[in-house]
Length: 123
Image 1 (cartoon, rainbow, N blue to C red):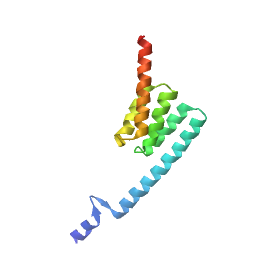
Image 2 (cartoon, rainbow, N blue to C red):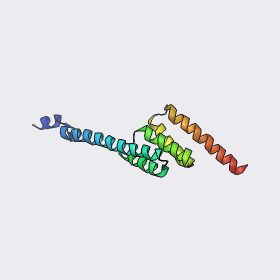
Image 3 (cartoon, helix red, strand yellow):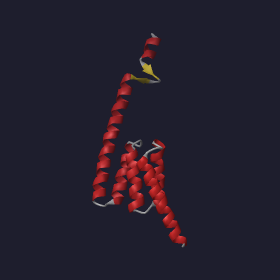
Image 4 (cartoon, rainbow, N blue to C red):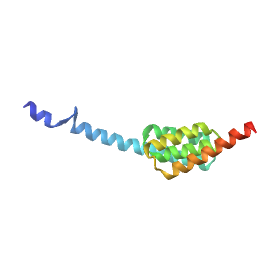
């Protein structure tokens, strides 16, 4: 009798819990997409701080989406001139996919901007 109940459980999770976990993941993705759409609307309106806030909410619900980190780092670096923060965000994207070409290009852009900023202070 005990073996039968063990066959239906996987490391403490039964089938209904696994189904609920899958539904929760789907819901989180849908919520993050909603916040991403809000971020894009704010970006079009050039409301960059609101865009960053919406991206933070999207990342909260789906932290494995590289696109969120790419857009956030681009906005921080190109529009808000917060290059250090932008580099931190791009590093997060590169932890998910070290070969991501857009992330590598944005990182190069940010490093060049950081160098120009540094040189302009001391020259």
